[in-house]
Image 1 (cartoon, helix red, strand yellow):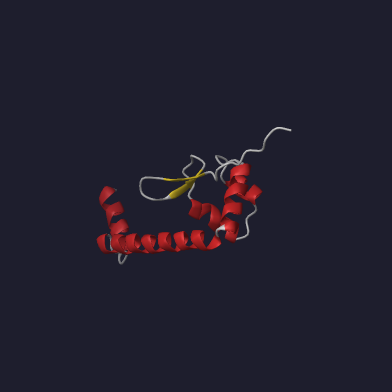
Image 2 (cartoon, helix red, strand yellow; image 1 turned 45 degrees about the vertical axis):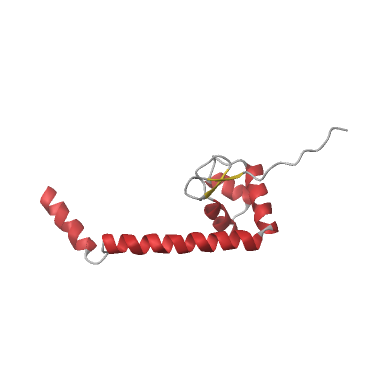
Length: 109
């Protein structure tokens, strides 16, 4: 009987500390959020055809076995996203954006 080899979970961390799936641009956040919202592995594969179904299942299994660590990572990413959003809102105030865009459109016309 041939030996069975364990496979690594298809996750990698990029230079910014973001965890991505199987040499793709799809983040762990994206996949887990879809799963938490009720999407099946097959539905996720349809939405992200660059991912292999087996990799999606492997990552979901990893999440289910390491839920607290993954959720801690996701909370950290959410905090980071909130900081970036607030910084962007300070730089590009959302108040009056419609008026600014309409004014720009009139100037271009």
